[in-house]
Image (cartoon, rainbow, N blue to C red; front, top):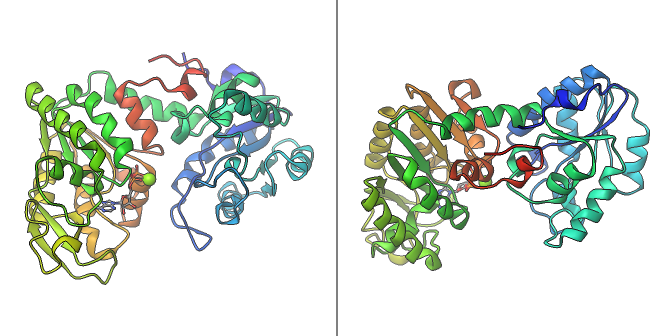
Length: 404
Ligand code: ADP
Ligand code: MG
């Protein structure tokens, strides 16, 4: 059983370390999508209401174990202060004297945010002893620990795993609500069940396909995932995103899908661009004729084509359960956003449960003008939700008492 906030007893006057996932997209120091910050607010308000002294820790981006100002959590602390409607102290380091001062300065109901966890090598170290040592420094700032960064529960990292063992610990409200929805997707989902995969973290996501195949009726492949499939079928993909070391894996999936009677649906047409950029020239081509343009092998696909988009939308429309992770194209560039927009629209119309998972996928649907409540659920975690659906062990949940 997942330990919930109540299991920690009264938190009035206690120092509570909350692990949030405040890893938001930034552009020139501005937050371009604050979805993860907003998702953190429920737990924080509950703790403020109880009169806890709140110490928030999070990562942002992938700094390499040392301070790097472009990944500072300062703008996030500012946004959080606006959303909570109260001052938030920001500490310029994570476990140093600034953090110590911030924590010591907290009165009941006050909130502090410590600087990016990943400015410290111990956070993501492969060496358990190094992670434990870093977790021990963090633990000194709290009486109890609340884990609420759903986007990182699949990671065995100091602030997610070791810290949960160093203090009395429980899950926050965000993790509890994410799990409610994901359990509906794994425990007898209504059929037809369709999973839509796209995005750019290709090698991360290819692994999930093997586990998902036996559970779903259709698997739709778009975004940067696509090219490894097309290449596995012997097609040329120009300069598109390709993981050439994964071709055999993908061939294995195609064979397994056929054996199981599951449809892996690949695009029939794609939008080929002259270069990566909003001002690129572009044309629609059959998926097996990507190099058949004036740009030859230098052309690259930036989104699925219109016929494919319609076909995907219709498969989604006739499904009762849909999980979508990964944009269908480079939605950040306006001329290539349409495929992702139409798929998002189809998801809002699902007669059943339609779930969007993934940081960029969630940012995409908001950037394209959809609101959160149009979807069955928008998960704050891409990798975490996929690993959950695969039935993998998630260290950050197991350490909170949860068993699949
Ligand atoms: P999520 O965060 O939702 O799990 P990813 O991080 O895997 O998604 O991928 C998101 C990124 O994938 C977006 O920035 C988008 O521009 C990119 N992407 C989608 N399609 C393509 C493509 N055809 N070529 C290059 N990048 C792509
Ligand atoms: Mg992403």
